[in-house]
Image (cartoon, rainbow, N blue to C red; front, side, top):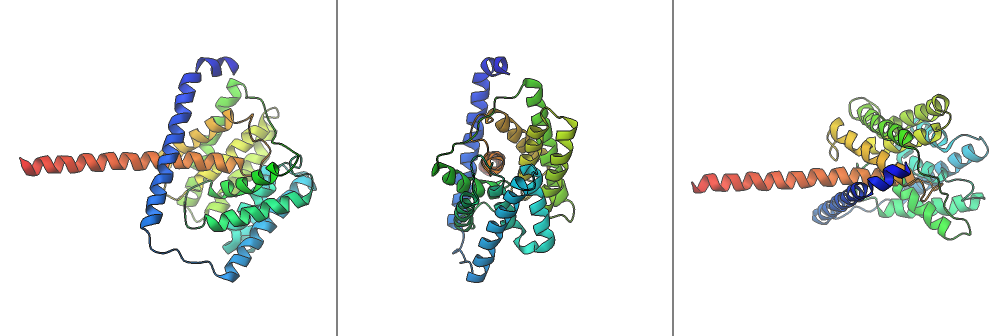
Length: 306
């Protein structure tokens, strides 16, 4: 992998720069939409209470399943999300957000107190970000990541680091990411499953099957599948069909491979990767729409003059 990284460093650097610029474009478009929208409705106190409780409970349950139940973070968070859908469907989204906080490695959160602080921070971010980026996959994970990362920065622990995977493994990561993103999107966009259920199903299948099928790299592949499932949670108003979702999945896999040495063990990292990938595709779509619209207007103008 090292040789590939050195030989293709310029191409990869350009590709990651393009992803970053397109994601920035997506953020700018979203901010313009929010500014043009009518006043933001305030959240009722009762809803705020239940939302905060769901996030904190989701984080606690997932962390317990990882620490005490010895489940992998992927399986634990998937179970938490699916359970939330069954128990209280209306609170499944905030509970799933909390589950991502609970995925944080016990190495980073050696006590439950750190998890509690991270969950409280995630509650604050969840409420502040409520008016924006609806339907963009990975938003929940990014919310969790902010809470977890700030908590880690306030402790004596530090993020974990993994080596870059081998070339063959990197290819499998990208392939699994594309398949998982499209599968999750199809499950919720073309059937009765809501996004949390779709992601949970894909996550638990990948989390159980891939470590068994690929003992050496199964955990990484399971993480790729789960991270890509967050991209697949996107609404079709943001990413319209499977072709564009496959592109988002490709970006998830690529970023996951090359971010292996950084920010490891933090809950929400996978979701943040998915969020950036979805924003990049959304930004690309908006840019194409702008160019095509402008071209169409110019053609009509020339036609009218002639």
